[in-house]
Image 1: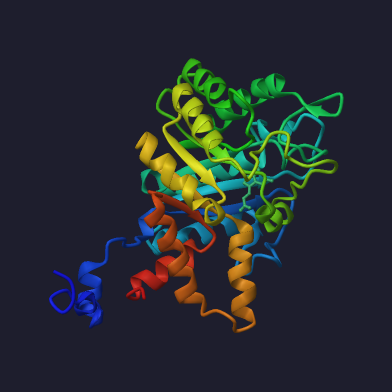
Image 2: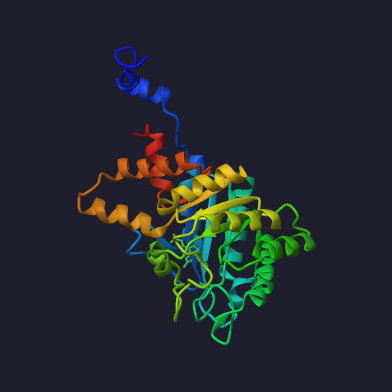
Length: 328
Ligand code: PBG
């Protein structure tokens, strides 16, 4: 065939035709909306590098979650910021900890209408800001697993439907699965941050979650950006250890990895459109350098097209509203 019989432009002529043949379509139910909740504040605190986002109080969290739920989002992921930190991150598994209280509040308010995901890590809770406990100034993998197991059970008890370990300790999914099962939470899901890279795009998040490492960096536990085969190994281990959903993080600089993970394992796969990716769009939009609505929908579409079934994104609320208004 070929030209003139083949005229691909016929399929692009009008909005109606374009919508009819679009291969990848975003839905509000693709999104998981992240929220920060902080202990000991009376008013929400705006996060300067993440316009539109706040460290919430328990009360304002409820309203903000209601807003995204109204826009069609069905899942949220919560990050807690405790009032005080210690070497072991004890606030992460305290029954009256900020995340446990937030989970109970949201579960009581939304019941089965909203999926509650709890990020499971120590960096917001330790005074040194690392994702695990230390021994001789280094993160002690296996002792950290014992603490992750306690956090998982306390989050499930508080109402988490899903726990999402993000610390990149070896064996974390297996340790958490075992602890959940033994505590009677066989139905609690695990969303594994399986391939999480040591990325420069987490900067705004670390300000928001007050979880930056006080010394060193996370390169001894998070993945090297050069590696894709290693991502498959990480995902395989998490699947073998019992992960229900797997995640690639960040999204945009790792779309190739996302595609490989989806094609190799075929599991429900999430991608985290991280804070730095969000901040870049907002910063450029503020300067008038990109059109925010089109740029955002294009970025989110690219992540879904690459293989994501679910997208964790700070754009969840605005993107859902744009989609409800007709999208592009
Ligand atoms: C840490 C955690 C991080 C993010 C999610 N969980 C930061 C880090 O690893 O330093 C980053 C999310 C984002 O940048 O949006 N447990």
